Image (cartoon, rainbow, N blue to C red):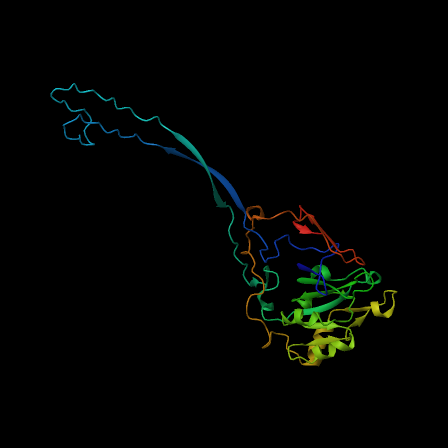
Length: 311
């Protein structure tokens, strides 16, 4: 799952949800690169010394090893000494890849939402974008841990910046219970539109009407199941098995990507089965705990080294 914390009506992650540690630049996972130190010995060769000729004579060739004898002068022998051998150790870093990309299992493809293998039968299926209540009264959440992408968006500047989740699920026919479902805001429409997702919500303020009229927007509102959980009615609506099949059938919306779908990759994932060594990237630091100023919800991520996910 990928979780986007976005302030100013855009999102974050909360307790008990899982997401891969990565640089959310889209580098998600797995190039296992080790550093290997190689010592290179540089030997400095012998220096060639030229002999000096006496006055009145021709200069000796640089290839001549012995001095020339000159009449009237006593030749002075020049000793040729080898320069001392110099050994220099230079450290250099070489990258060694100990694991490469894995083969995608038969009958599967890499999801455009997560970069992980899923059934090829889902390749053209549109995801849904469900609005999930994040008010304290609405807890516990159902189904959010199985979502492909979670946006946590500030729902209001009032009430200590209470947030709401928008979860994207591609394999929506596998949903057992998702919710509780609440109203949508204007900031959700362009985010859902990036994925050609059908928005699942229960109403919203009057100023969403201009967005509902846009051609790229498909949505289901207030057409899901009610669960008797002992809470006020606004906290009892959930997506249960069969709800989405019924909604798609009654609406006439396509369950597969339509002409508004983005054909370009949304994220740049690392090759499947490889791991990126983040320590090799400049200006990188450990993000073992992440908190955002959503005071009502206390949104926080804590990295779990054993599972390599955020809890």
